[in-house]
Image (tube, rainbow, N blue to C red):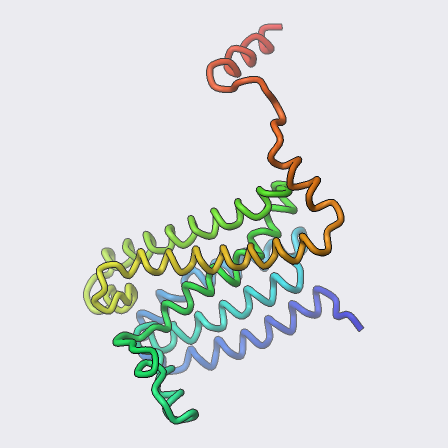
Length: 241
């Protein structure tokens, strides 16, 4: 039996609440943990207030849930110190970092990639249902906004690091000495979003009967009249009539 959206979201909320509370106990750096969770609280508030008027699909809620759970792991340990390599050594008997030839902790890189991979689809759902995006634009705009959101988060990190400074600022940035850290993070998020939209496109191409017509229609010219000063003149003339 298909679970209702309300019940499904309730189950995810319960699981995330337990996960959040468990990882809020004795984090590695309480200040960094609090700073990492500012945006989480904002997102939870937005979802709570918008649920009745704008419920998302179960797929979108699941993808958001997975990303937030991974983020809480990073917030608990601080991203640069998540002990994933120790987990591999203890449970699988080998070092992932040694196997891959890595010299830094790459958990933050993984989460930036998953930011794009997991959140591009919920963003696409928003575009399709609110902006009525179709065809090419239903894949391009979600990719573009995901990339922009990644860039804005890097700016947010920079601003927070400048504001708080010291060890807290360094822990929150988590660059680990890489001067190109922000660029690599944005590139990974962009690649993740591109991959998500590519998968969505392939699936829709196979199951959507009017896929080609919608794609072609989205790229057709809707109005052959120029805008800019020409549109301003038309608006003034319409106002005077």
